[in-house]
Length: 358
Image 1 (tube, rainbow, N blue to C red):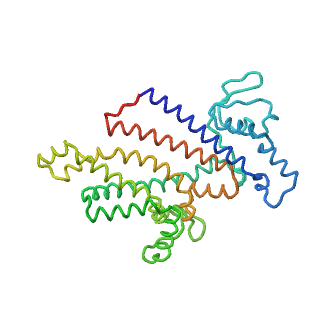
Image 2 (cartoon, rainbow, N blue to C red):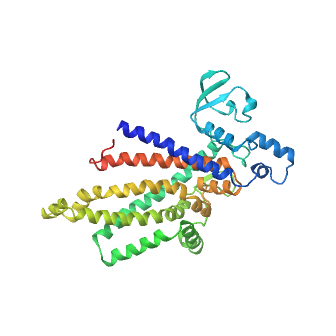
Image 3 (tube, one colour):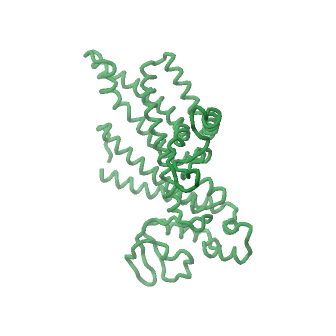
């Protein structure tokens, strides 16, 4: 287990390094002028020059890359010569200086995600802290809907193999998997939030918290969660139904299930006590990937439904080339994806004691 955890930790650093490297060079080779976009229409050459110096846009790309890695690293290298670092100085970090020699020092700190270019220098960490909980709530709600109905309908489909019910569920799954989330979002928003709004009492757009009619107090609006959560859960729901069906059919064909039937156990007892747990492994594996994917895939769903989450924030950042927000959001999503997969691997140990990690 120790060897397994060590390899996993090493993989975390290598994966995050790869993600940061790709995203950094991808967005920094795009022909754009962040300094001019920050100033808008009111700018001159002197202002642009000051902005470029402050944020390091005038530095060679490899030096910008080194500084960004230095910001993200829990242990970073710095110099007492502030002129060499411009805004990359030690004052922006909340950490502990644990080594100093020859004008250089090392800081133990929380990874620094820098500040937004567009939101008056607001720290990217604060932006993520404000929006990520809403995205988490949306993703968790979606995966709960997909898991509950996916397992239930998957069991029904398996028990009615090749019947009309099974064929109908397979047809619905095919449509659900092939339909893009942004199209489903537009369709459901229009149909249930506009055409049938008198019956559903749902809105086309809205977030978890909204200001009251006087614009003073934020009110909890749980009904705004229904449509985006259901839309985001359509594709994982379809996958879980098919996986649960296939897995349960395979388990029901095992010898110990035939023995249980021969002993006179009811089908309900066989499914609940002997089959479900052994059918969960492929479902759990898929759930891990889908949950992490929902954190990233909620971008267009949040934007269409006006849900104030990290996905909507990424769309805003892309429109204005707010690179620190884009990179910081991508870094956090990648980190969560890796952590979720590690937790799923550990969960497999409980579900299947035969699995060993070395």
